[in-house]
Image (cartoon, rainbow, N blue to C red):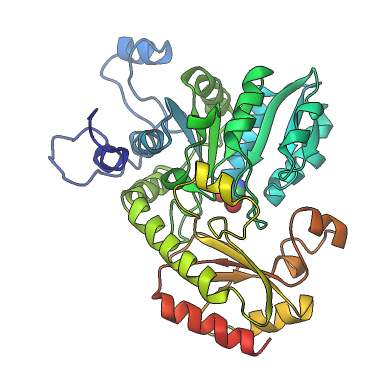
Length: 390
Ligand SMILES: *Cc1c(COP(=O)(O)O)cnc(C)c1O
């Protein structure tokens, strides 16, 4: 399938057809696999053949999902996990030992922050935060024991972007592994491996599923690194369920069309809300007013499905806005066909001080919208009527 576009290849990648000649790939809902002989089984455990053993190690349906993501991310191999957090934690546990250090962007997913600051320190693994908007300060923060540089771009919920090419070169120069959580952009819009990332992580729960149904995670990248991840995970057990892999693998067939529509709607919404009298500022990576516009244009195909805006009335206006919504869903998830609104200052980030919130781009009146697939006029009308009441 060499000459096809990557989206064609991903759609056409599937588990080998069985003797039933099914067109759509079957779901291999089995925990273990049987062998024709003791020798085959012996060979499987010695990795002398490619026979399946046990679904904690690998399962054909999970393999299909991995292969599809590898095609989309330009990755050599991958390992799929039960959740995005299992992918992140599994990666840290595979490669870090006591005494090692992670240089991380300060704007990272909340549970990743908790892993770094609460749990890894218990095993003698330290971390330092670097400002996503000041990449020129990152090099000075590299230590002799820095093993991983870790980041997300665009960030949640600030939608800040960082120059992946610059950080990729920095990691290479210092011989440090670069790990990128590419959840917000998806491989349709951004391929971190092309800019020097060694490993790319996804919460497949978000845009990849796209319909808020199942949890999942994946790590993809260089074959020799994935081998280490595999050896760690096959023993410790964060593996993805074949059922979830089957759901997610079908979802990947529509990822490109869905992301294009999410972007259409988000772009239109950003324009509609710009200069609204109740809003200080609309934030969207592909808006010329975004501070990271040039970098976003350089490394992303489009701006993505998330926009944020800052209400002039602060926290009070934020809550009034949320209560006035009639169609948009009030939930903390994102990446769904249904448009979702959240008010980070009173929910996901309520435990942070005002200064800590400001450092990750969260103002008291910030609203995050995960723009869905509904008709854009309906999405905009609901937001505009809620703005009137806030
Ligand atoms: C949701 C999310 C995660 C965690 O994924 P789960 O599937 O919920 O475990 C990690 N990183 C980012 C950027 C996320 O949005």
